[in-house]
Image (cartoon, rainbow, N blue to C red; front, side, top):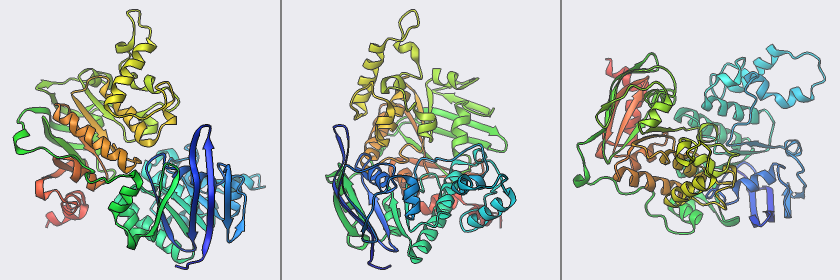
Length: 506
């Protein structure tokens, strides 16, 4: 890595009305480095990246590229200058092929009347050769979320960029896919490409980045070589205080209960779910681990009747359930918080209060069935206070909130029906460390108050730190479970991996 500064930002400010998103920010990026940018949601990271990519224009300040002042008027101008941006939220066309998505900018400027699909797919396959085994001819909508994220990354790699911005690129990737991405990032850096890497995951920052810059409240707080700073230092700089406990205290021996909240026996829906049996005790938090595609979410969604037609016995607080659909599940007090917050978790353009009441409108309706806005506001205010929801007004759209507060709205929607059991799928994906800590505390408090909590997560440190017990899923089956001192990343991955199954066969 060279010390040459390719991008330098000086005293840059940006406001949205009375909200000052960036306050005199300084930032520099060296040629051939991987530079992490960290900060809580709302710290100014995304605003700065949108300025660099030409999506937003600064109110004041200077941007130098190779020492020359530039005005980046649009994303097209940013691409011309050699800047590529992979956004956290997937922004692709679901109804065209993978190859067409990757080369969309090329086909837009093409003067040809006919498209050579075969050549396009061959070139796309060549790009994917270093990323993943994805068929470039399939429609994008037929891919999993993780593979769609890889298409976003592949698209950026075709832009011949000198600066590549990656915003939470591993949020939907498997561990193997993430490791492949990290290897490619280092190869790109060795070729002189500069990478801005935005992540809330300290392990990723310290394992793969050269420097880290922390933002808080729209201000630049600190920039350090990762060798000269600790993860704790970064977290404390992000939140402006010492965070000594990311996870709340687990159950003590005296708090253990033998009362069963949920009991599942012989749940089947071939080939996705195979002979799944488990139980959840009152007061504990049960984690579900496994590789993406192993069947973790399918088990939860099958139990709640969100999809498929799983067979088997499900007992909630001793009552055998005969559910026809998800509405029946809600009525019995069993709810599911989706991993796709913006697709299934919240209605982004609706007010916060209307989101929170959405699962059971009867609670906020008058005897004639008409919604009472005052009741919605009262319910949202009560649950918002319990979850420490930070917002301007409860009538503001959910899209105006940070990722962490959007997730709190999604959780408040679940709590509005007074659930007995909540399945939470990737509950802190894309959420900053301060909001993560709050959500973990909320989940532990709910468990202590008798609500059943089952957490599905791809972040092994989260499962280990938060849960009392972790059940591991492999190929639709329960391959084992770990608790106490046996709850380690190595043991979980061993149970989750095909290699372990192969070894057990000999």
